[in-house]
Image: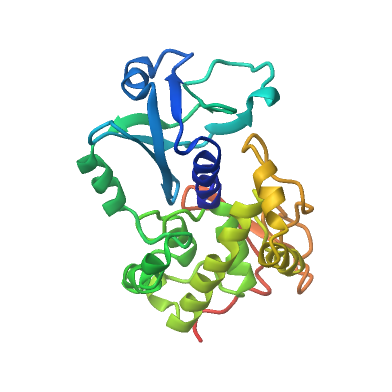
Length: 293
């Protein structure tokens, strides 16, 4: 399932390529045809993201927002017209602008919703580490209020979108390793300083994932990516990405994710796994023992 950085990158891509344009909206597959007609020939006003949810607003369409959740297999690509090629299946949703085309396939949710429904969705979500600065300011406190009273493990809580919006399994496994946290620690036993460090790390890591369309958690890659963002070099890479596939600027490397049985790059112990929170957790039993600090 795409994690929150992917959806924020998609929102930025839609704004950059189609924002402010009068667009043609259709449903080649046919399942969204009636709703597509309601937003056809309208100006794409703004796309935004919260966790794993995408919202697209159209000018002149009163109280209706396009809501998309990609789920496990969904994809939403934005390409230049001259990049289009043969596709295996018709799109659920197609948005055509002057020079770019966005196509949505296989989503869990693709629907027009009113403002009340949108607020209901947002109210169910925890703070998003990729959200606006004013929301980030109290994000760590709001998430902590849920964590510190819970018997669930911190590994489960990180995937609970009502606690923290946008974090998926890869970030869960990797940030717990980065901070040497025992993933089986009940939330109410986790130290507050340890939680704040974990939150701050997510706030730093997710924007890099959005910029490069890659989850970066190895410190050498994190440092290199941060330098490219700081000097503006990352923009050319970001603007080249279509969302069709993962970015490849950096080698795909992780500390624990999908490395069962391999040696930990920190202590040498074999990486373990187990099903937890509906996904496979990967962790190092040698390094990850911290609960409080």
